[in-house]
View 1 (cartoon, rainbow, N blue to C red):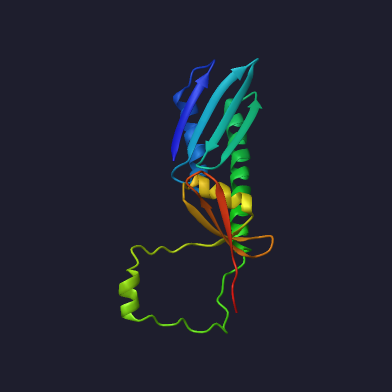
View 2: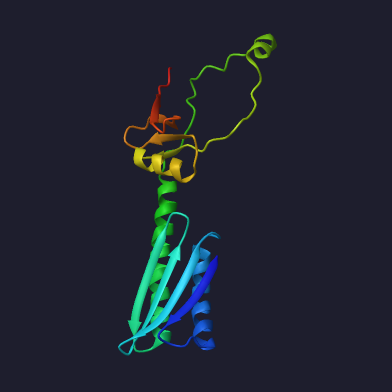
Length: 183
């Protein structure tokens, strides 16, 4: 995690810097390694203001507190930001816990075996990837596909439980394939 502390309209003392670093240290366990934390300390009309921004790859959290004492403003701002981060962390873990588990039906027939001669004529598989299929709404799958810069995205739609594949063609058009399981 990257931490930066700056001051506006005041001098940043070693004591204030140390206190802000110490309080922000508690936030590091709720943030990933790619996150940036920026603390801005300022004075406006005899009010001490602590403004903390936590920016991650796809998230942005902000907490601002005003007080007569800068140390109290820092404490309250970090407490407020910690509460936001915990709520976000709990929501993410709850969503994963309640996602439907993908299981294979017990009445599936075994996969047919393919002869070596047929494999030679068709060619060999060059790359094998495991794909984690998540239960998502379509707009979230599109956003994740664009964020990860992937040419395709496999997901299970939360509205009807169907397995779907999103692809982006050369003309930048999105195509959706609904997979139908034959029983």
